[in-house]
Image (cartoon, rainbow, N blue to C red; front, top):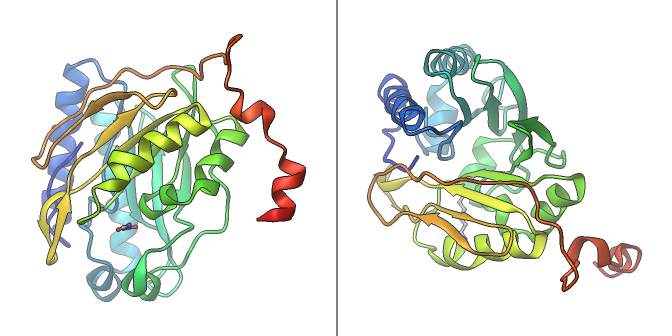
Length: 256
Ligand SMILES: NC(=O)CCCCC(N)=O
C-alpha cells in the first residue's frame, strides 16, 4: 500500500488501511504491507508530544480488528508500547485473525527528530513463518545498512517486509532495495508514503524486488496498491552465486 497519511488523524489513516486491505483481499492478496507509522502519520515530534501510551494501545487494537475483519495478514508500523520516553518505532505482523505473529523495533533511527522522539531497537529481525514462507521485517533506514538485511537472511528470512517513510532519496528504492534482495537472495518489499505529510515530500516509489534483484512490481509518485506474488528463496543451483553459503563470516567479523 502506498498513500498519504494525515499526522495524528488515526481514524482517517486506519480507514485508508482498511480500504486497502479490502481491495487487496479482493485481488487475492494474502498480506498487506503498509508504510512506516501510517496509522499515526510520519511526524515523530508530534507523535511524541500528542500520543499517549493508551492512545497507541487503542490504535494497535483497532489495527488488529481491521486485519480480522478483512481476513488478511497485515504488516503495520506503529509506535511501540510504553510512554513517549521509552517507546520505539515498530512493525507488527498481524495474522488474518488479528493475532500478533511478531514484531520488529527499528534499530537504525534516522536523524535528530526520530532520535529525540523514539528509542532504538537492539534485536535482529525475527523469522516469522506464514503462508509457507519465512517472513521478516525491518523499517525504513534499517534497509540502508547491509548488516540488517544480511542478519535477516542469515536467520532464514525469505521475504523481508519493509515499511518506510522516505523523502527525496529515490536511490534507496531504485538501487539499494534491489541490491539487498540480490545480495541476500531474498525478496524485499518496500512500502512508502507518497505526497506531502508534516512538511515532507515523500517519494512513493514503493517496490518489490525478487531474490535475483529483479523488479517484481513498482509504483510511481501517486497513491496505489502494488500486488506482487512472492516465493521461497531459490536454490543457488550449479552456477551460483552462493552468497550466503560462501560467506567467510569468521573473517568478515574481524574486519567490520
Ligand atoms: N524514516 C526514515 O528512516 C527515513 C530514512 C531516510 C534515509 C535517507 N537516505 O534519506
